[in-house]
Amino acid sequence: MCPGSREEVTRARRWTRDILSNHPCADDAELIVSELGSNALTHTASGTAYGTFQLTLSLSPRTVAISVTDEGGHPEEVSPTEADADDTHGRGLTIVMALARRLDITGGQYGRTVTAQLVAPETGATTC
Image 1 (cartoon, rainbow, N blue to C red):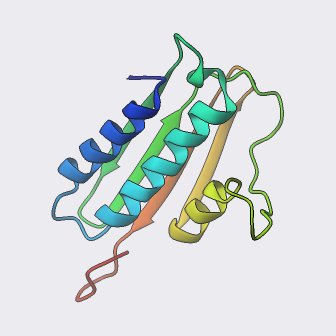
Image 2 (image 1 turned 135 degrees about the horizontal axis):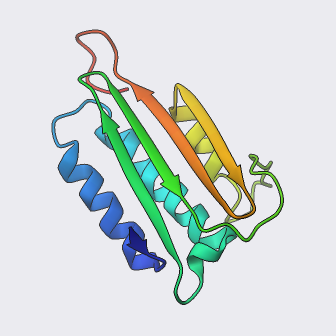
């Protein structure tokens, strides 16, 4: 469980990097943790004074599943948005979808879990 502060997203990224230190998906996983954690803080009750979000990593030799669960408080469905070229926000979920093999969103306004699955190449390649 991570407290709902921006500094905690930095810690979550570092923790992910430490856990996946030699995994070929480490860079992509770190970016996804940053995007999903930031989205939880920006768009849900997780970013309030006493809010939290939960980060879970599930690992196998070739697969990494990253799940971020927020505290809800946002009734609309989660979906990628089309950001204008000069917008400073609005690309996070689109970036996650570009990196992940699979993206699942479960829950509703009382809390959602967004899970991104990364799969490393069979052999020889060094990144996802």
